[in-house]
Amino acid sequence: MQNIVLEPFFHRGEECIAIRFSHSAALTGVIKCLHRSRWSRTHTCWYIPCTRDACVKLLKAIEGLAVVNLEQLKVYLQQRKAVLPATPQRMPAQTAKMIIEYPLNTENLLALTAFRNRLVLKGYSPNTIRNYCNEFHQLLRLMGARCVNDLSKDQVLSYLLWLLETKGCSETKVHTAVNALKFYFEKVMGREKEFYDLPRPKKPFKLPAILAEEEIMSVITQISNLKHKAMIMAGYSAGLRVSEIIGLKPGNIDSKRMMIHIQAAKGKKDRMVP
Image (cartoon, rainbow, N blue to C red):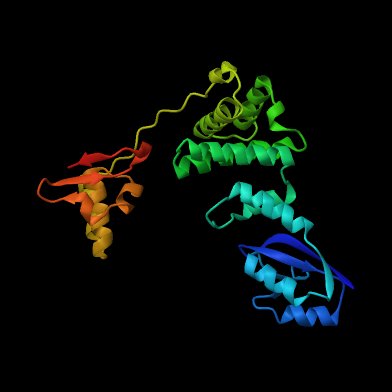
C-alpha cells in the first residue's frame, strides 16, 4: 500500500496542503479528480486548499489505497490555532512560513494560548490583542527549545535592546513589546513587581501634517460617491477615527440637537460630538 504525506505550505497567497507520494497512476487519477486539486510545478506535488472540507474529501477518496501521514499537518494546525484562533482569518504569508519553519515547542505554545485567553478575559480590544500577541509571538519564535517562563529580567532587557539596536525597530514597536511582555510575566505568570520597571525608549515628538481648509475642500469636492463624501465630511468635521466612521448608524445621529453619539470608541468609551 502506498504512503502519502500531507504537508502544509503557502502557495499563491493561500494556505495549501501538499500531497506527497511515490509515483502511482491509480493515486494520481483519484487525486486529479478531486475538486480544487492542482499540480504545482514549483513544488512538484499535487495540492488542495488547507480546509477541513478539502481534507475530508481527500481522505475519503484515497481510503484503502494509501496510508496517510498527518503529523506535519497536525502540528501546523495546532500552531495556527494558537496564532489565529476562533474567527477564520487570512493567514499572512510571512506568518505561515514562520509557523512551518519554526514551530513553537509545547510549553511556549501553551504560553501563547494562555496569554491570548487572559487578554480576552480582561476585555482588551481586538487590535490590542492582535498587537500584543504579535509581539509575544515574535519572542517565542526566537526561544527555540527553551521555555519562555525561564527568562530572567536581564534576558528580557537584552531582547528589548536587540529589537532597538539589531532589528532597528521603532520606539513605538518596542513600547508595544514592553507592554506585551509585562502583561505576560505579571498578569499571566503572576511574577513580582520586578517587571514593572522595564525601561521604555523615549518616543520622538512629531508635529502632524495639517491640511488647509481649501485643501480639504478640494479633496471633498472631487469625491463622486455620495456615501463616501458623507463619511469623509462627517469624519473631518466631527474629528472621528476611521473605525468610528465605519461604526456609525442612523440612530447615532441626533439631528435635533446636531450631535453624533459615538458608541464603544477607543477604550470602550462612548462620547457625544457636535
